[in-house]
Image (cartoon, rainbow over all chains, first blue to last red; front, side, top):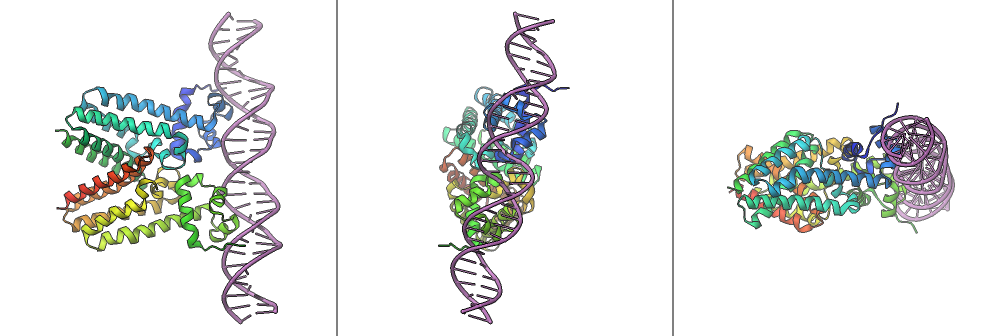
Length: 186
Length: 186
DNA sequence: TTCTTACTTTACCGAACGGTACACATTTTG
DNA sequence: CAAAATGTGTACCGTTCGGTAAAGTAAGAA
């Protein structure tokens, strides 16, 4: 009996481990323990070791957001895309039970390793949201502020809901943010 | 030549190290390297090891906020205390260059070690802010929402300003939040 | 001055760390 | 079928991990 993986199967498993344990806390032994994938396999797919694993996870996350959130915000119907963002984000972060790995990496020294990917993720999120807000009728200056506020509020809600171990905080914060953006675009 | 410390001198040094490296990233060797304090001394003051060190740091942070932020919010002139909160918070977090250790601990597995202290810190912050908002004229329901929004926004601003390596984001977010609370209390 | 207390230094422990080497098993390909 | 490519398991490397033990040093109390 032998289980055979491919890279694409492993990345999501790694993502959850980095989320739960952080970059430093995610040791190779804990990774093999939780995934059942031995070191040999891991280094076969990620010759660059832990840093390459985390890099792959960040790229995977980025790709998901690009397709599910940023692109609609840039090109689809503005109001509809913004509404979809809130529900997608609420689902993705499992009502606050799941954290934003990019945000978590930004907080400590791990940022230095991945500063480009981290900066990009947020820049593009804010830009895409600003674009949608402007198409929905905001002037640029207000759209920029609101976009920053939205992304900022999501990150804060993740911290707070986990700190209080209360997932209602997350969904509630999202609703408040959604209302604020709605009233500003009509 | 022999440098002699006492516990109170060490805690702030530890705080900065935990902030920069996180709980798992802050290894004993990195602590001794950055502080110049040997393992022997550290274990003399903190027999419980790294966990006791981090606990002492959290208690120290909590005490500072209690005195500089929460108590004024509960007992002093409401509007004045809220205004003082924004400037104190902006100074404390050095315009976003310094992170909130409590928030950072909340994001990963470290939360499990310190859940009580982490929960307390935020609960008391929100409660104190709500109290001030109510004295400034908000009804309870609105005060609760605004208080959550304020604390939430601060945490998000820390994540975002570090992710973008742009400290103007932090101060700007704080101003936006301050304005929102002001308009709601008049 | 001597004793005690408080603190530091150094050497050390077993376990776990990230990473490597390579034989081995399994598919895929020709 | 055989051969090549792909993926896995295991043993091992030197280093660093958190933590301990105890000798040594300085300062205050008796």
